[in-house]
Image (cartoon, rainbow, N blue to C red; front, side):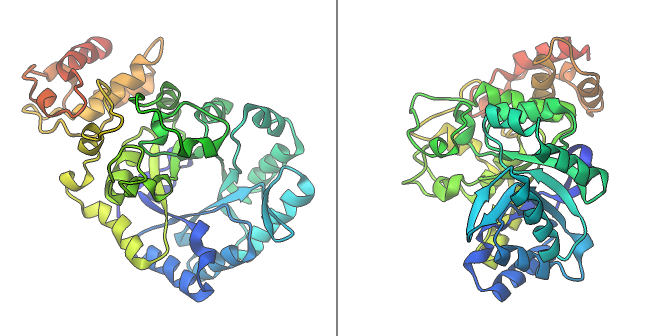
Length: 380
């Protein structure tokens, strides 16, 4: 298992994580063993947005004796009322629900205290001026939550969270289909009515990912498989099926992403996700799938897929392109991006213009021209 630093939290999280929402579908003992199996495979981050007692008890029992081996995303504002999940900012429900989380997980701290599920600007404004956010800061100041995070499906809210400054990481929905859709406050609308003329990543999403990278705000990924639809040719909006490995690789190549949190029913599904770490470049290749899909395509836009390799002078073209995009989005290149770029073993100025990479790019990116612009931008 490979591990990545989750933004400014400094936590080293597994590239493959555990999304816990399916735990309650099975016998408690079965789900406890599933979590333990995941840990044996190197998975060390679990999301618990679920407010139901069964799911929380399962995670708590799975962590007994090894709490310090897990990083928990615990959500503040996910409550259980009359046997139902309710997203709430009402402190008479919020506080008891979070205290219940601590009790059932048998812990006195949560690694990542998540401001639960904000998708609308109106709600963002209300929450940021309420007793709810005061409670979040109180938990952080007392060490009950080690880091403040937020979950959202809307890149507009994601950008506001980055700009807020105190939010260290974000749980965000990332997959090739969602990335082609404009920002919305209605997550349900993201699953249907795809316009076959759409192509490329939506600019709001591009900018959000860039801001996370620039500001060292880590991303964990939810809905990486589009509710399973991208694994099924008949349901995929691209008209083709992807593999779990391809979709994990897609998410992990977005700027700022540290971990993809998959949902699991069986140990076999865990193995299918974890095998990403030993997969070949061909097995990870989502770019050819998108480029050859009968519906939708990305043209002229680098997705950082690495399909352009190998370079005769060993330039890491995908990384150079990523730093160029990050810098070019600003009026002046951020110093942190400049330093990261200069630390590369080979920079754009070494490009010999052979265009071999262009012949391999599934999206028709004019790589040689971008190398010239990158060398001019960074001066090297």
